Length: 150
Image (cartoon, rainbow, N blue to C red; front, side):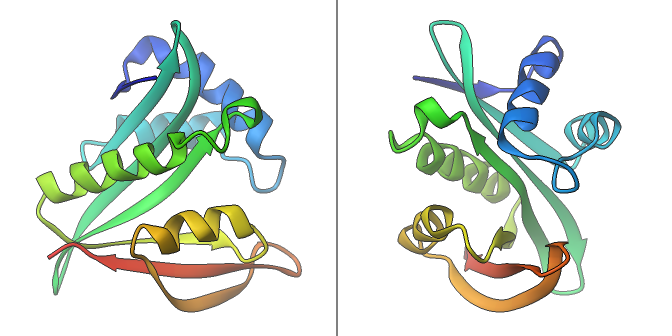
């Protein structure tokens, strides 16, 4: 597996993964995804094998009163490539980008029922700090996880 930063030519393949991994209303729109990726305050990592995209992940950061905070917007891996360590490596790459921007912490929302994603974050040192009811849809909560980077 090769890991690299997003290039403009990657967008169609990246969005095809978004369409496989998420269904409305959880799916990002093409317009929002393009804006997120194009932001100077974000990094998008690609995982690919044999020139085919297997997954991607996006982190963004912002200056807060307490310092720079990073937010993991998404980590997505195609079903046939899951349980191979790709999500964990993408997570490490996101954290590296956040560290390069001198972020104090990184946080995220995860579907409260997505046990495999929650295991990934907990193994990587993230701690649950809260819950957002109806975050993804009506009666679909998100758990909030945070990891200190300093």
